[in-house]
Each structure stands twice: as structure tokens, then as C-alpha cells.
Image 1 (cartoon, each protein chain N blue to C red):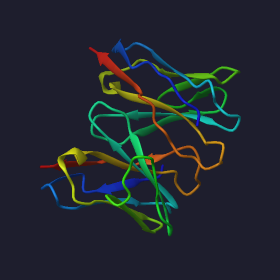
Image 2 (image 1 turned 90 degrees about the vertical axis):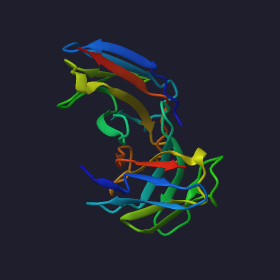
Image 3 (image 1 turned 60 degrees about the horizontal axis):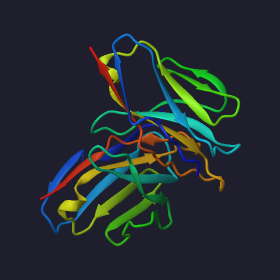
Length: 116
Length: 112
């Protein structure tokens, strides 16, 4: 199956700093990538849809100026949490439907963000 | 988007068969049903996908009745390592571009 990686796997930062999370498709070209946030004991919440070469589409309630998404190539999408605050501490996960598109999603391993 | 409803939690014991049912009353004609498994602090992992009747792979079976308004994930002879959260998703949406949306999932705990 298709492989999606994320980097870093975990990061601790101070409040007010920015953090960049990378999501890479290792063996396929990802035209579309999805970014999720998951708080403890809760389900995955879709934050935005990232499309290669175009602006991301954000879900209602997600600040686009705070969560910057760049999808400059077919194998890399980045999520930058700007001016991070403790309430941004969460588990961030990306996924892609793979080159064939459609219903099956391939998920990254996730990035644990802790903002102090 | 078709909404899904699952039991919040289930308990089982090693060696037993576990069946998790998902309701999706508003499933569309072109929607598939996909199940994912998620362990703590990991991304979800694809388990199985189906459209109708029965699908079986090396880890699970998926039963879908004729009206497709529900589906049942069957895990044969579970082990402790099957303790995880299981999500069922249906898609694609009416626009033809699939945006995966997760419900609350079912937390399965397998006891020794």
C-alpha cells in the first residue's frame, strides 16, 4: 500500500513560536492531502484539504492565517502552526487518497505537538 | 455526506469474535464503506472496504446488507493487540470528490 510519512513525530515548543509539520507521500504522487487534528479521547477532526498548486480549503472554524498549509509539490504538504499556544497542543495527522484517488485514505503516523 | 453511527465502546476477550456495527442511513448510491483501525498516538490504518454483500481479507470481514444502511465489521478471534478504536467511513460525497469525515468511532478493549 501507499506510504505517507510525517516529520517530526513529536515536537515541543514555547508559546508564541511557529512549528512546521511535514507530510510526505513516499511512493506515490499526492494531488490531495488532508490535515486532521485529534485531541485526547476524541475523533479526528478535519482541518483542511490541501491541493497541489492551489490554495488549501479550510473547514469552518479553522483559522487559515494560523494554520498555514503549503502543497508545493506532489509529494509534500506542510502545515505550519503560527504563534502556537497551549490550546494548539494536539495530535496532527495527514492523509492522502493516493494517486488513484477515491475512498481509501493512507494516513501518516501523526505528529504530537506540545506547546508550553 | 453520509453520517455514521457506531457504538462508543465494546469489550471482548481474547479468542472471541467481535462484530462492530455501523449505521449509515443516508448512504449514497456511489458510496463505499471503509473501516479504519487506530492505535493510540498513531495514524489510522486501513482495514477493509466494501460496497455490498460480503468482503473478506486476511484480518477482517465486512458484511453489508442489501439496503446498505448499515455494515458490520467482523474480527475473528481477537487478541490483545486488537485493542484500538475502529472507525467506519462512507464516501465519496455527492460532488464526486471524497472528503473523509470521521465519526466518534468504537473503542474496542480486548481483555485477557
